[in-house]
Every structure is written in structure tokens, then in C-alpha cells.
Image (cartoon, rainbow, N blue to C red; front, side):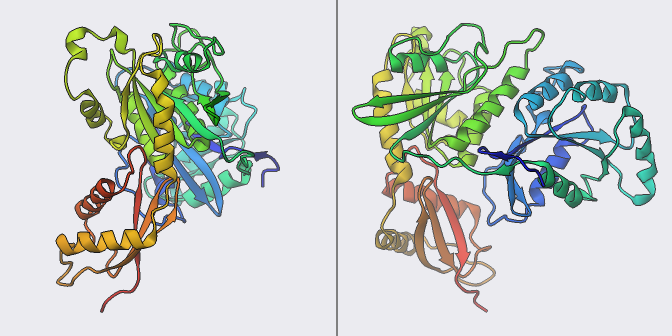
Length: 447
């Protein structure tokens, strides 16, 4: 057991050269979770980050291979950048090797980088599907690896043993206890050079944060407290990375690491989009992270002063933007210019409104009356010849609002009906800016 502790959820980075099975192992870890209560819809194949736990120990996983858009980056800079980031950010590094190919030249490059690491490193020799093939992994001792675990990510062989080793080495997780419950914690997210620091400087009225037209000017996440109309806010700025020569596409990877850390602490996310460029693949990933973490959200379409007039006059820009960022289609959209100050003064009013929705608790009687009306007008479909019954609904959690519907047929409620219920709830109750979770539990199973 590790004798260290951390106030953030331990982060495990899966690294290795291409095609060794990093993403397969990532997916296997998630499928092996022992505490899954429900399936959350909307998880895409593009997902590169997940919270998980094993044997009661919580940690986060990042599949570094998932950061790479196809064809945008070539080895060896790809792997070097992955490991550079893992060294900076992760609490434990899991290096995956291909047991069918044996030691390859690029494995030696990986080892050269990992020798500098002062954090725990676990080596997993993958694609060893049977015990009789384990001798083929012996040649990895040539790399100076004293200990490794032979696994098959595809078949699940020895994956539990690997998880045991991970939780043995990661630090104990002790979440930060917020001293001031009155502070609204706001994470400022967006790809580099989108205007995060410029916006915070505009909030503060001074150059508190260094800004630059060069992507990645600052390295560390910066906390800034601000009081507006006697209300206190903590702004968590995820701006930038350390500038390194010959690093290009690693900017996106750093941004995701920063966002993962920031979202653990935040109540509300401000997702800033470059109005000149429109929503990008990376913006969609950040949107997916916000939704997966269950945080309130406000989308800021920045640099509107630089948008051509013919584009600026197009109707329905907010609807178009939400359509591109479907994971957070519940989020209001604001058009701003952090440089000129346009719309900036209205942002905190919207933060307050979203936070109120995010924190609200709807009375149980009101919930049940409304559910009854919905079901009477549009009942759920028959499942295997039997009627689906909803007995009652309650809201056990806020921040994000979570509703539990007790039913006789958990598996009988189709996804389209669940979406129908969520849409009706959003129409009835003010839930703009906040994700909501609808959970179905069994009251009793009819025979």
C-alpha cells in the first residue's frame, strides 16, 4: 500500500508505443469496474478519460493513445510527448508492451524516457493470451525491466492482478474539504489561445494572468478568488502548458489533463469556444468531459469582435453551437469578446442562474405529480407483454440533480423513453445549464 496521500483523485496514465493495446486495456479496466450502478448513455468510443475504482480505491484513467487524431502526428514524437505529459501529471504510469512482437526499437526509446521518472511505473506485457506463451515475455528483461505483469487486455487475463498492483502503488485519495461553502467554483476551460486568461484578466480589471498570442504561455492551473456583489467565486484557470520546442499536438493532451484536474474541483464549467474557428474536435472532448463529470456549464463564444459581419448576422448561432456540442446541449450560450469586454459583465449573472439550477432540489410531491401526468398522457411501451409501472420518483442528490424512478421493469424502459422523460422534465423545471441524471431502480419485479 502506498504511504502517500493526495487531495486529488490519483491519475493513472497508460503509455506505450502505438498498437500495443493501450485503448483495449483502458476499456477493459472500465468494464471490470466493481461499483457500476448504472449505465450512463452517451459515452462515445472517443473517450480517453474515465473515473473508476478497484477494491474500494478510486482513481482516474487516461489513455494517452486516445489523444492523437489520425494522421496528425508521427512516431517518435508521439510517444515522447505522451510520456512527457504523464511524467508531469500522473501519479502512476502504466507502460504497455506488446508480447507478440517482442522488444522493438521504439520500446527502447520509451524505456529511455521512463528511466527519468521518479513516480511509480508498472510494466504490462500485453497480448499474452495463454500461460504457455508467457516465456515470450522474458526478453523484455533486456530493457532493464526487473518486474512486469503478463496480461491479455482483449481476454481479460491477469487484468485483475494488474488492478491490484495499481491500487497498491497509487496514493491514498483524501478529497479537499472546502472551507467556504459559499464559494462557487468555476473552471475556465477551452483549448489553448482561446482567451481563458484574457477573460479572467477582464474579470479582475488588471493583468493578473500573463496573456500571449502564443498557445501555451503559462503552465500551471491558476486559482483566482473574486467577489462580485458580495458573492464569492473561485476561478480555476486551466490556461496553457509549458512551452517546449518541437511539441505541437501535445497541446491538446495537456489541455485534457488540466481539465480533468479542474473539473474534480469545480461546480460550473465555462467552456470557451473561438468564434472565428467554431467548435473543434477538442472542444467536443472537453464538452464530453463536462457532461461525464456532471458539472453545470455555460458556453462562451469568444472573439466575436473578429467574426466577419456576414457570419455574425446569421440567426440561431447558439442552436448551431449546441448541435455541435451535443454532450452539453443543456448549456446556455453567450456571445462575448474577452478583449473588448462585450457581454463579459453578464457572465456572472448566468453563472449564478446555472448554479441555482445545478443546486436545486425539487419537492418530492411536485416530482411525483408531474411524473403521473407524463405517464398518463404518454405511458412507457409494453415490455415482453407486460406493462411497465412507475411507482414513485425522488431526488436524492443535487449538484448534479439526480432523480431516481422506482419501477417494476428496469430493463424494460427503452433509451428513447428515458430521453423523452428528461426532455419533459427540462420543459417543466428550470434545469438549463445543468446535466441531470435519471436513474431507474427496482421496487419489485412482477412475475
